[in-house]
Amino acid sequence: MLAMLVFLGFILISFVQDEIDSAVQMLLSLKMSYKAAMGEDYKADCPPGNPAPGNNSGLGATEAEEDFVDPWTVQTSSAKGIDYDKLIVRFGSSKIDKELVNRIERAIGQKPHRFLRRGIFFSHRDMNQILDAYENKKPFYLYTGRGPSSEAMHVGHLIPFIFTKWLQDVFNVPLVIQMTDDEKYLWKDLTLDQAYGYAVENAKDIIACGFDINKTFIFSDLDYMGASPGFYKNVVKIQKHVTFNQVKGIFGFTDSDSIGKISFPAIQAAPSFSNSFPQIFGDKTDVQCLIPCAIDQDPYFRMTRDVAPRIGYPKPALLHSTFFPALQGAQTKMSASDPNSSIFLTDTAKQIKTKVNKHAFSGGRDTVEEHREFGGNCDVDVSFMYLTFFLEDDDRLEQIRKDYTSGAMLTGELKKILIEVLQPLIAEHQARRKEVTDEIVKEFMTPRKLSYDFQSFCFDP
Image (cartoon, rainbow, N blue to C red; front, side, top):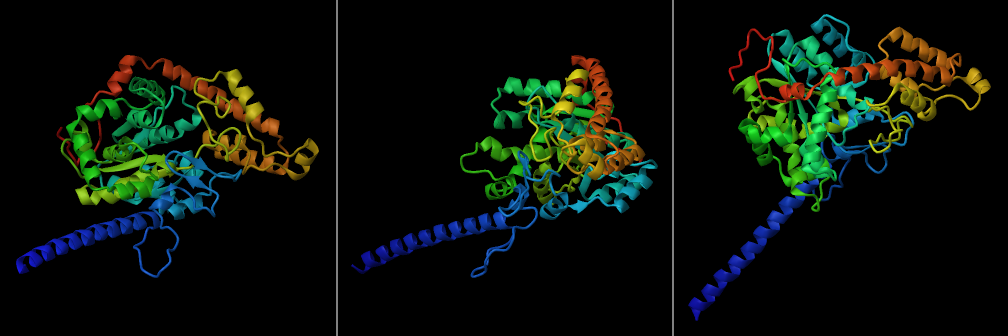
């Protein structure tokens, strides 16, 4: 009888211990979820504060704020667009100030790109480290990308590539461009063949920006990951060090999202590490990466920067750009399904003129008389916004701003200037694209050794 009671006691203790272990695991899981969402450890009897930058707040705004930014959605109710100073605070990045722009100018020995001069690239992470490396003749490389969701690219899609091409030219460094056709297959109603086909077509527009074929590798995820053990090994390393709770907190994934979406961030992170490209960097793991991108992509790289030291790699540095506004205003969204939402790279001169005149949101007054008296508002006028991106002459841009603000220039005159800037820009791009053959695309997308100019550093693929 005593033996039976002892036996039952052991069973009861074991059962209770299992329940306790289960409850502890659940509590730990809840605490991890809380930390991922709030950016701070849970404390009993202590109400949560504001979400910390770099965690769930990276998805966008709280209910009390107007702006919402994540890798798939950008929303604001302000005609001026996103409040980027608030976004810097929320994401925990650093402002590109005059001091940094001046340092870049000293390092490269020439005038900084207009995107830097005008605050279009406005935020960074560790750009000073990149400049340290460059000044000490140490290597780094560039990485940017494109999600090919359709054949049609618009002028806004060119912004990161125009700037990346300038960076490649002034720093003379290798560049990798990731075509995330796998991402678009997972998120969009596309077949794998469609997603890959869009990647190839978009690559032609990217190549037409003038990238140096000897220093540029463009790759499709669907192609390259299966052919590169180094790339896939890094994907797996990243996957091992990021929990489901973390990606839910960073990207807002839910239990109903496909496992492909949940695992995709590791694929976008992998090009940040040099040994993902052994044909370029050999087995070197310490070559730092600089990523020019729109700031909505920052959540991917906050995750990457968190993982990097845990797997023995340097954190990638970043340069963040503002968002390119839709023709209808900075508070609306550009869409490939709405041909009037932007200027597309396939538009004719006539289509450009019609779109700007008919659809570009105006900061002008209701009547000519009112406009002459009170002037226009450049902060909300889309034609002026577009000129800040594409008009090179700083003095002329400032004169246009003064004339429009004072009322000396009318909306129609401002739109005419924009049309005269965009028409040759698009025509020249179309001419360059016609020269990009399938053979040229294949050469850009073939894994190979690239050219670089770091005498003190040798890569041995």
